[in-house]
Length: 374
Image (spheres, rainbow, N blue to C red):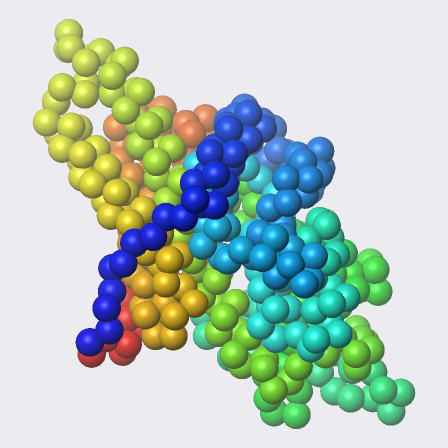
């Protein structure tokens, strides 16, 4: 049986964790998070420029393509702290797009596109469809070759994150009966191609994308022979980074709840003294520590065949369960106020629901693990 459960924490991870903690705490206080809920783009362009200047977009891009030459393991502490402080922005989407090009692009595409992403060119992924299938190879959108050497697309994509802010969108389609990946210049889309969707996590932005009538040059087709492997890589990367974001969110919602338990007085004593509240918050903290171990273990072995997938699915399943429980307890412990939108625990509960809907919830990943382990 393959070895599981190894942990690693590099010097680069430690440095990035320290910088990300300070930056996110300063740039994303909860008051600012709530202000951006009402913003059309959902993020602060000035903060995005600072993120670009910090070089975070290039962390997992090889030096040959303008990046820092590190691994996804070094992206994890950044995502963790973004989740802890709910820092809004297209970092997750653009990082996934870079991984899509690394895993599925031609050499020319890598040399052309990756330096732009490292320099902050916002790019989104259009992989989800109305069927809601977490198997990214289940695609109904199509691409058809035209006589002019272009590809004509059709179909509709759902939950395309940060599409309105993106310069490019990477979409999955079926071409000649096989999965394929194409790059779409957003400037070529018609005025009605994008429609903002109402989603549970209002700190994020998602759009439906109509591909009907959209044409892209044949040069915008990523390597067809690598499309299947690229979709698998994107799927695992998305789950690893989502687990890291949820891990950070769990730490924050536990801290938020503890502050309340240590200040709210009922029947002459602090409510944190009651076992009915004390024990569940301890359970939440224990589960948080387990989640963090899973996340960094998955980051450490992500690139290892077999082991990396198992560790990543374990991390996502654990993170989903942990954040859901911690945020739910926070809402309950805050009483009537907890059921109002003014309670910050609501934002974390919504974040847990959002990530459960993206790339697989805990039950789905556990079913996948059963196939991998048994």
